[in-house]
Length: 135
Image (cartoon, rainbow, N blue to C red; front, top):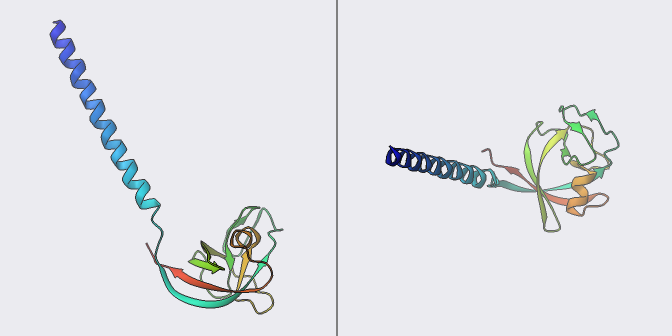
């Protein structure tokens, strides 16, 4: 009787170990695919400025709730949610179109203040941008 209990416990331990290995494998494969960024498509020059995110807790015309850390761009034509890379002085950020607000001072893009800060962009500057490939 005692031998059967030991065998049953060993079998249960083996099943638990296999389940743990399967869970770990799934988690690692999910993390590695989630960390893969989409490829940039094209490379275009544009002028971009920044705008203060003073409209906290308000929704843009794209439906994005703006907060103090919201990163995104406004563009008059690109569709809401379109993911784009914006590069300024060798700093690149993957972001998305969150508004269609009019741009200021002949700028094609308006970056939220947190995004402009992350890129080091002040005032109105020349940037490069690319579409992010659909995933």
